[in-house]
Amino acid sequence: MSKKTLFIVDAYNLIYRMFYAIPEMTTRTGDPVQAIFWVAKFLNALAQDNDDATLVVVTDVGRSFRADLFSEYKWTRERMPDALRSQIDGVFALFEAAWVQTLSQEWYEADDLIGSIAHQHENDDYQVVIISSDKDLCQFVRDGHVHIYDAMKRKFMKEADVVEKFGVPAHQVCDYLAIVGDSSDNIPGIAGFGPKKAVDLLSKYGTLEWIYEHIGDLTLKMQEILIAQKENAFLSQKLACIITNLDIPTLPDMPFAPGIQNEAYIEILKKYEFRSLIPMGHLAPKKELNQFEIQAIDTLAWLEKLEIAIRWDQEKNPVIISTDTYGKIVIGFLGSIYSIDSKKVDVSEFIDFIIDSDIEIIGYDLKASLKQLFLIQKPLQIEMEGQARLF
Image (tube, rainbow, N blue to C red):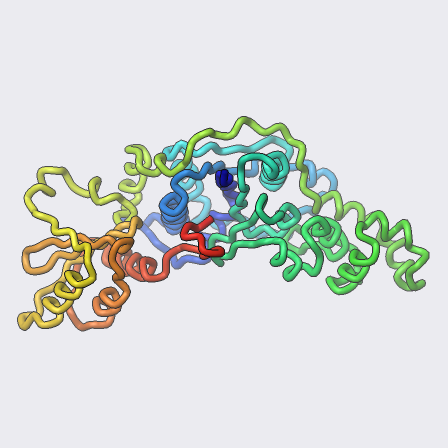
């Protein structure tokens, strides 16, 4: 029996990445919403390709024990921008409305909860997928059991990727960071010891403790540095190594996908004017929809006929376009409405025609619809050894 997928979302990592990687978006009243929009868009895409997966969200709360160990821990991080701060409640409202369990624990960081979940479930019925770009979490990667997915780079990390990134396997990542330090968290490391030296020492001795056990085997210069930096080295190890034995609540025994289609979730999408993310059945009252006969285009031949009709329209009538995140494209042309399911029909050439031609295109939130057309051509999907799904 194949394993069920358990997605663990590193909440603030995802929110920050979405905020900084995407151009600014605002509502009609000028409120910034790009982080909320792209988190919602990512959840929709994830649910679409993983309708039986479980999902939990993990977040930081308050001060962590690491700040007491080292008062300058994470001091180099900049203050959260006001434009992002104003969107935090909106993102977590999405999680709550979708019935997604959000976990946090006083005194510990999100990484510690993630590490504890991954460690405690890596050998059971779940395949654990951590959604984060935090390099600290690479210490948990284990093929077939725990993997990391970077939502922005759309990269799925396996054991070989960890070795390529650090030069050491996953189980040595903690000691690697203890030696070289981590500027993003302001972890000092061992001054003068860079990645190459860390890899050489760990490949020979395996652990930080064993390096110090065999310090006499090293050159006098290296011995002097290691002795002078011993306190920093083991402090850095405590800061970099993630806790794996926290008490974790029972995880939800149900898929998360249905939650993003309930009324509360849809109402939030409407509140923030995310029309392109709202399922079509929620966009207008049924009595308005019933005034039109929507023709479903389910063959390439029929789609080509529609393209020809638009291309050779002598009066250059405008084309009305609407899209959703489930791969549906709705075209209004000459009083008729056509629904095209991109999962059933190859729409690549049709989308090229629509985007590249000089026909007039109109629609509500047209910019979002055009973005969605591009994403339909390049869907959020990682092909793995013949698998059609994301994971």
